[in-house]
Image 1 (cartoon, rainbow, N blue to C red):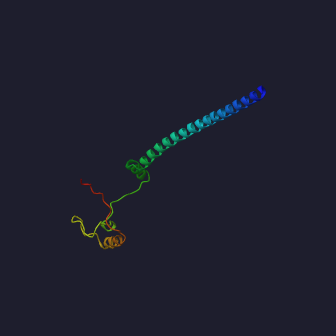
Image 2 (cartoon, rainbow, N blue to C red):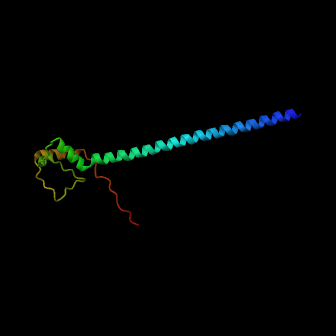
Image 3 (cartoon, rainbow, N blue to C red):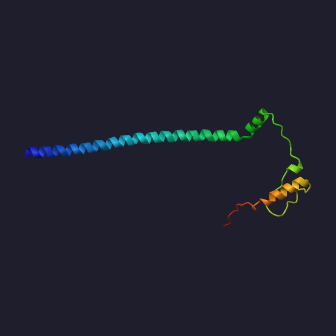
Length: 127
């Protein structure tokens, strides 16, 4: 009877010890995975900041001016025929002159065919 009790106790203790060790091993593996995910997250945040900085630099007027000067691009003010005035509604502003030329009028008529209507505008909430 003592041998049976000893073997049963040893088997139970061994099983409990194996379960405990496997849980601790899984815990250590998960902690390594968490550290790796945190490291990659931190690297992605840093990369995002760098890319946002680069986008802001590429869109800056100073860089555009340098690029245009480097390419020796000649820019000029457009003539009145090349300017298209698009209004948000059917009424015309009072300060816009109608002397835009025949080609300008044709372009305005063509542009007015493709307008969808006034843009959505936010209005303040009155309480």
